[in-house]
Length: 423
Image 1 (cartoon, rainbow, N blue to C red):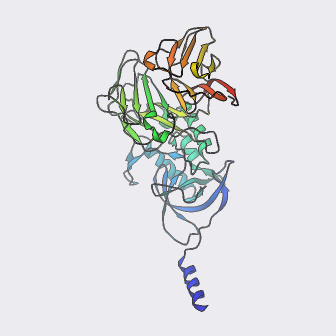
Image 2: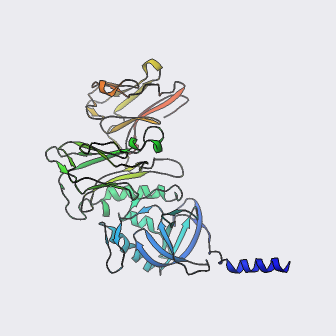
Image 3: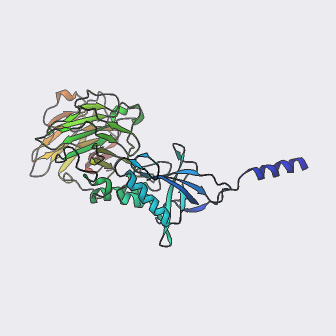
C-alpha cells in the first residue's frame, strides 16, 4: 500500500499543473459556441497570424506557438524584428498585431473548440487582446483592416461566419490587400480582370482535383495581359505561379486546372493530387474559401470569395426562368429569358448536385428565347440554343430533384424543383 501511494505521489509531482482553463465564447465579443479558454503572456509576435505565448497555469515557462484561427496574413520571408521582410502587407499585419499586444500589456486570451487542433505543429486558437476594459478579437480587426484573408477551418469553425462577411466588406471598401495598387502600380494596371472559381467538382471532390479550376478573363479587348511572375492562391499557403510566357489575349480567358491537365497556353496545370478549394456549407461550420490573383508587386488584381454573404445581388436574378424534364428519354433543363434585353449565361453554372453544367461563350439568350440543356449527348454537338451536358446516363431523379442556375459565388439566380424536393 505504501509503495502504491509513493508511486502515485511521485506521478502527481512529475505532472505539470493543469493550465488555468475555463469555458467562454470562442470569439471574444461575439455570440456563438463556447470554447476552452486560457490566458497567456506573449513571448514574441512572429508574423501577422502567429505568435509565441506562455500559457498561464500550466506549471511551465515553455513558449507555445499559436496560429490564429480563421486568419491568413501574407507571408514573411525574414522574421527578425530589426529586419522584417516578405510579401506586400505582411509586415504591416505583423506590426499591427504587435501594437495590439503591446496595448494589452502583453496578455492575450486564447480559445479553442478542440484544444488539440493544430496546423503545422502550431495550436490553432482565436486570440483576443484587452482594450477599453474588454477582450477584443484579433482576427476580426486584422480582416476588417484588409490585412488578412479568411482561412476557413472545420476544427475551429467558430469564426468562419463572421470572418467571411468581414472579408467581403473589406473587399468592397478596398481596404489593405484589396486596394489594387496599394503595393505600387503593377503591370497592365489599366486592364481590368475577372476571376471565377469552380470549387465544387463533380462527384467526390477528393477523387477529382481536375474538376476544380479557376478562370481569369481579360476584360480589356485591346491589350493583352502578360502573367509572367503573377500567382494564384487560395486562402491557404498553396499557390500557382504563372510561367514567364503566360499571357491572356485581349478579351480572352485562361483556365488554371487544379489537377494535371493543361497546355500551358490557355489551360495551365496547377499539378496537385488533391482539391484546393473548400466546398461552401450553410451549416454551423460555415465553410468556404476564395481564389486570389496577385501581380508581381503583391497587389490583388482579381478575386472571388464564396459563398457570397454581403451585397449578394446579381443582374440575372428574376431575368431567367428554369424548368426541367426528368423523363429518362428526354432528360433536360430549359432556361428562358423573360426580359426585354439579351442575357449572357457565360460565367454561370447550372447545378443538380453533385453535378454542374458550366456555360461558356456563345451562351447568349435574346429576349423570349429558350436554351435547352440535354443531359445526354456530346458537347461538341452544341448549337446556340441546344447544349449537351455529356452524360451517358440519367442524373435527374424522377421522384424529386432540384436544379438551380447560380453564380460561382453561390448566389441562386433561378431554381426549379419537383417531387419531394424544394428550392
